[in-house]
Length: 301
Image 1 (cartoon, rainbow, N blue to C red):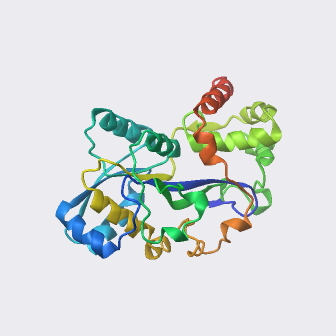
Image 2: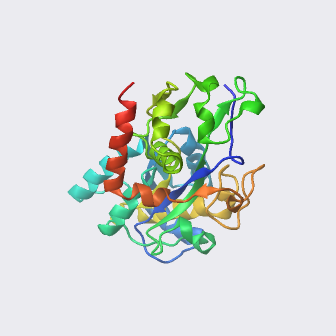
Image 3: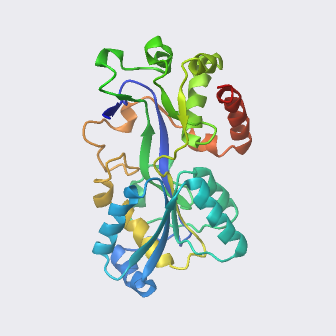
């Protein structure tokens, strides 16, 4: 199925991929870190999202730094963060570095003292909006959440330009979205929509007979933990991943101000973007309330 995202014509919800680091607040060169990492031999990485989104970076890293391997565990953020919680609770940390969707976990872990500050080489080029002021976590990519459509089924004249367009009769029975009661990104999108059009929108949207699926999306947070067993290897991976060379070929927007946007796209400042994702998902009381209200609509199917 061919699909295109409609980024330039509608508001986009912004989610920054963050890296939480439990390391020293001092930049070291990659070569210096490499010498230390070779003694540790490995880095244990937990990564959310499709495994394929991590595979090429792991392969490139291991080729660039022979002698340092990546032990990777993939899965959903909501599963991986629970494994990390158990490690923290038992004071038996196995994970060095975590790349997750659940940004709120990193703020919580920082507050609990589970993370140390680390500002990797080149971090001064990262927009302050995409990094913790103390260096506890930092963005590694910036992902826009936008509407997408099947180009084989939707002619250009009918491409939705706002959430209201999905209420047109031609889209009845043809809408698919992640379940906002299960996925934070989906919840944030619907929160933005009802904030603009009111909760009556949900009655009209549900009348369109949408299909809800449970699925994760691109990982949005990355952390190195205070008691990581291989801290130098973790610092090396993060420093390498954030370097301009890697960021320039990521295929997504970069948190670095010196990296150009993906081909065919304008700088993020050119778009009408909602930047409230991190604040929303960090407010657990509001999240609980919103999930319950959205579930009252979805549960009527």
